[in-house]
Each structure stands twice: as C-alpha cells, then as structure tokens.
Length: 271
Image (tube, rainbow, N blue to C red):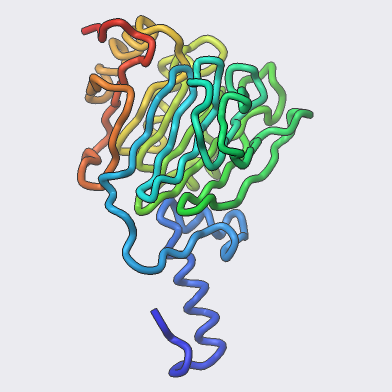
C-alpha cells in the first residue's frame, strides 16, 4: 500500500513498522522479542501463489522437505535416509548429531543454516530464503547436553507457520511458548528415548495447541504406533496414507489434531 506523498515522514516510518509487524504471520511478538523487524519479516507484495501448492515431505527420522507455493525448497535436519541428490534452496540443522546434519545429501548449492555451532552453542538465524522466512530459538536436548545444544526452527510461508522442534528435551519456557502461540504445524520428536517422554510431549502440545502436530524422530513404524496408542487418549489422531502432506489454511483443523504421516520406509501402514 502506497502511503508516501499524503502523510508525513514520521507517520510513514511508523506505519511501515506496523505493516512489518502484521506481516509476521507466525507471531508479531516474535518480531519484538528478536528485535529484527525489517530483516526478520518478509514483505509480500502482490498476490501470492496458491496455498494448495504448499506441502511438506517426511523422509524419516527428523528430515522434512518444506515446499512453498513458489517452489522454494528447504530441507530440515537431513539424515542418512534423505534421498541423495535432493535439491533445495536451503538446509536447516537443529543440532549437530549425525542423524540431523547430513547436509552433503542435499544438492543445488543450498544455504546451510546451522542452529547450533560446532561448539554446541546457539547460532541465531533470522533470514528469508525467497518466500520462506526462517528464524530459530535456542533450546536444550536434555539435561546431559548442557544449556543449549538444540535449536527450534520456525518457518513462515504465505499465511502458514511451521515449527520443527529438533531434539527438544524439555517443556517450553514461557518465552518459547509465547513465540510459538500462532504455530499452525508443529513437528515434535516422539521416540521417548533421548527426548521427551509421552506425557511431556502431550504437555508441549498443550502449551502450543497448534492445529496440526506431526510426530517425528523415529525410525520404524512400530515406534509411531506406540505413540499413537498413547496420544489418541489426548487428541484426535489421523493416520495419513502418505509421507507428504499438502497444506492450506482451509485444511487446518479447528482444534489440535495429530497427523501421523506414513513412514517413508514402511511396507504397510499399521492400524
């Protein structure tokens, strides 16, 4: 919207600031919290691409392809099962474990965005790759891993907000919970071994209450079935007969549901 020419310079600057805040679909408080208004949030001039072209593809463990309406591709936490040669514009790495940082499997000269340094300290990310805005917030893998060692990545594309929790090993802090209050799709580890147990996973879901929760960080379908048996006592569970999920605002449930994607290495999808 053109405002220059009929309002003063001060008013223009103020309105531009407010415009950028409203463009933070994921959460306007995220802009204020990180203090990076103009560099954090993408402007979206004109009419965007159809939301029907947005999807995520699960490759097993914690690896996902995030695909925007304009075919921007971001791979999250590539592991040894990611198809060698997959092309992407960027790769995000939540932690430096070898099951999450196989960046060499991704081609196309992607931008590598590491949320954790090799010294196991937080590496702040505030950027956008074409039409996907990417930020991260620090978290822990567990008590034995020290203060940080994990990074929660938040992706904003179109009017959708996705959060990949990496190897989170704790309940969300009040600050983290505030940042994630408008998340639409949350990917959460459910192996209950090095990460949270099932009861605490439910508590994290309660904290965020996203429309869609996607279990991740497990390597055989049976692990997902154990989690599903527990989770259905707390939230509706949908078993998706595909490893890919097309996203749109219209398909988002009105309240939280757990979408269990077909494990990409499963022969059959268990009941």
